Image (cartoon, rainbow, N blue to C red; front, side):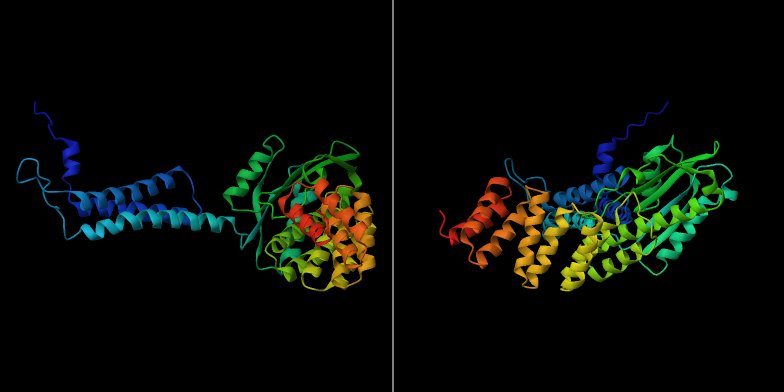
Amino acid sequence: MAHNNRNWPDFIKNLPGWITGFIAFVTAVVGFAKLWQGDTGLVTIVLLAIGAGGGILGCAYLAFKRTPPLVSGGKGTWQYPRWRPWALAGLVIIPLLTAGGVGYHRYQQAQPPTQVILLIADFDGPEPQKYGVTDAVLNKLCQALARYDDVQVEALGRAITEAEGSAAARAAGEERKAAIVIWGWYRTPGAIVPMSVHFEVLRPPKYMPELRPEAKGLVQTMAVAELESFTLQTQLSAEMAYLSLFTVGMARYAAEDWDGAITRFSDALSQTAERVPALDPGIIYFSRGFAYAAKGEYDRGIADYDQAIQLQPDFAEAYSNRGDAYMFKHDYDRAIADYGQAIQLQPDFVVAYHNRGFFYQLMGKKEKAIADFRKVLELSDDPFWRQQAEEQLKALGVK
């Protein structure tokens, strides 16, 4: 019986260099293609490692391989002198290209998505055709978001049960590259209808506030007559449109697209006249007020802060931001009054102390300014605010 005496390491070693290089190149291209498609799984990482590693090893072989020495103790000559400069360049370029490609991909992943996908699961409940809970939500969202090219509403086509939970909803959202997944259930055991709604934000925009338990599955009850008269469906669909428009508005807000944010916030507020338990409208007025102020439209910003304060009288940050708007209008007395109210509501509000101290300084009220800047140093561990306070105290002659 013949034995296979082939020495595989020698066989691989003796393969023509262009074959090894070609395999490494193809592997790297496939790996980068998968990476650009958003696949960051183990297979992609292995392909990139093989491609980059193979390319580096191949270049090292061409750059440093010597011929056998002619005399004992000699070093021989470079075996591939023609290719050596290219191979040496490859040893630098391949790692740089790999690191640059991976870094650029991570940068792109960190940017706000250009297309926001809302994924709507079927609401789990009896007689879905009769009650049309899912259809009502889908139709309302499609109508409310139709004007925005950067938002797409998709139906999952199946229910996510309470037993499957948030993990299944998020997995479905990741698979469909969704930013928001809406799912839930309802029951009709008798005169009372229990319902649970989940508004899952998979990638919350920067500055996105925490939604209340009503958007996180808190079981709510209502009369069965509200389900049968479609009052429940109308209310639920309006609330989902309200939350969705606010969330996509916050994505534009985070990108400093103030006009885009204002339009979406305004549309959110128009969806329902009822107060939505999951997110107080005062938050939307506050966010829109900031967007207006960022555009230099201070009167509109102040009007929205007024609304936010009317809805939430203990909203310290709204007072502080309204004080900022008055500052830009050079209405220093009102600015100081608003900062004072913010401090009264939130005694550790460092920014309000600093800004009030600054205006006291402008108005020549030195002792009051010193007291506020000292309060900043007492309350804050933030190097920025401490430095600002120290510089102002120095300007006031306080060591």
